[in-house]
Length: 85
Image 1 (tube, rainbow, N blue to C red):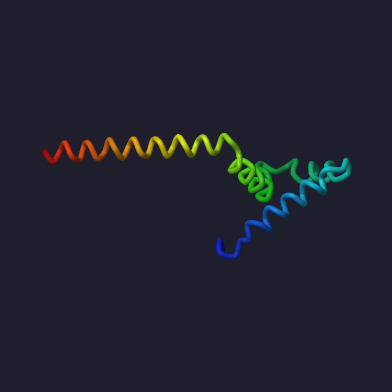
Image 2: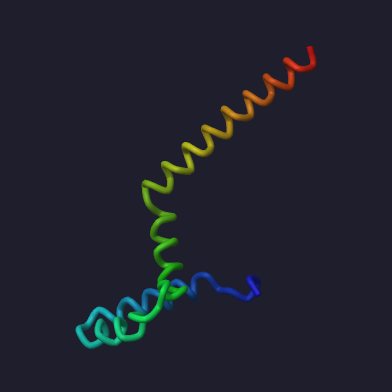
């Protein structure tokens, strides 16, 4: 099923949803549709993830994870080398 998902079209749907709900009537309709939901609509969640993936916070997190991975690999190499001696 994932091979059938068009991410760009999905995000465009989120932008359209936001645009439609930018008017007072659209805002009211959106709230009426989503008020009883326990989670946001998938299309809105996808938009939030897309926005977050372009944020400075996300890039910082990736940078730290990469640094941790490098440090962990150096440590594991050291431990492996030490165990061989």
